[in-house]
Amino acid sequence: MSVTVVGSANLDTTLRVVRIPGPGETVMASSIARSPGGKGANQAVGAARSGGADVRFVAALGRDADGDALLASLTGAGVGTDAVRRLADAPSGSALITVGDDGENSIVVVAGANAALTDLDENELAAVAAADVVLACLEIPMVTVVRAAREAARFVLNAAPSTPLPEDLWPHVDVLVVNEHEARDLTGAADLADAVDRLAGRVRALVVTLGARGAVVVSDGVRTSVPSTPVTAVDTTGAGDCFCGVLAARLAAGDDLVTATRWGSAAGALAVQRPGAADATPTHAEVAAALT
Ligand code: ATP
Image (cartoon, rainbow, N blue to C red; front, top):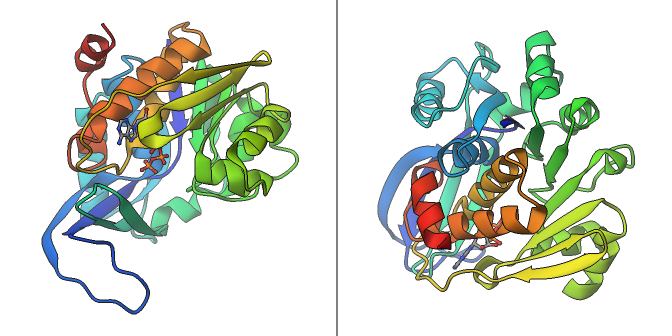
C-alpha cells in the first residue's frame, strides 16, 4: 500500500495571539514558534505516521537551513524523500501563521521553491506512476498537479488553497477533498448543500470537510455524514492536511471512502488538540485507539 504526495513544504512561523488582527489593526503576540509545515509535507507526514502507508514525497525545497529542517522532519516521520529536489536558486517555502485563542488561524504563504516545481523529472514521474494512490494539493504549480493526475493510478485532489481548476484536470480526479469554503469557491454556490451537489456531479467521489462538524462523503451517488469527535481545539493548522494524508493512506490500504474518511476525521480531531502542523500529527496507534 503506497502513497505518493505531490505538494508543498513550508517552514511555518506561528504567532499566538488573543485574537487574529483585522485590516489596519496591531495586536501583541504571546509567543513565536517555527515548525515544519506546508500542505504537501503535512499530508505526507499524516499518511506515513497516522495512516501507516509507504509514503514518498515529490516536492522542491531550497538548499538552505529551512530546507534542511523540513527534510529532517519528513525523514523523521518515515516519508521517502528521494524525489524531493533541493534548489540552489530559490528559498524554501515559508508561511506566517497567526493563531487566536479559539484555535482558528490566518495564514500567508511565500511559495519560494514550491513555485519552481513546474515539471516532473523521470524519478518524480516514476514515484507518481508506482503509487497505489497519489495525493496532490494546490500550493504547487497547476501544470504539475495536472501532470501528476494524468500519471496516477488513483488520484486524490485536495483543492486547497482555493483556486479555479482547469477543465482538463476534472476528469482525472478520483476523489476531490475540499473544506466548505473551497466547496463554495469552486462552485460559486452560496449554499453548502448546493455546492456539495454541484461538485458531486463533476467528480467520481467527493469529501467535504466541515471542521468540528466532521465531513460529508458523496460516493456512488450516496451521501454519508461522518461526524467528528468533540474536542477542545488549540490549533487547527494542518488538520485538513492530516485528514487528507490519512484518507489517502487508508484508501491505499483498501478501505472504502467512508471508512477512510472516519480515519481522516479521527486523525484531524487529534491534530487540532496539539500546536503546530506536521508536529501535531498523531500516530497510527492513537488514531486506531480513537476509532474503537
Ligand atoms: P486547515 O485548513 O485548518 O488545515 P481545513 O479547513 O482544510 O483545515 P477542516 O474541515 O477544518 O479542514 O478539518 C479537517 C477535519 O479535521 C474535519 O473534517 C474534522 O474531522 C477534523 N477537525 C477539524 N477541526 C476540528 C475540531 N475543532 N474538532 C474536532 N475535529 C476537527
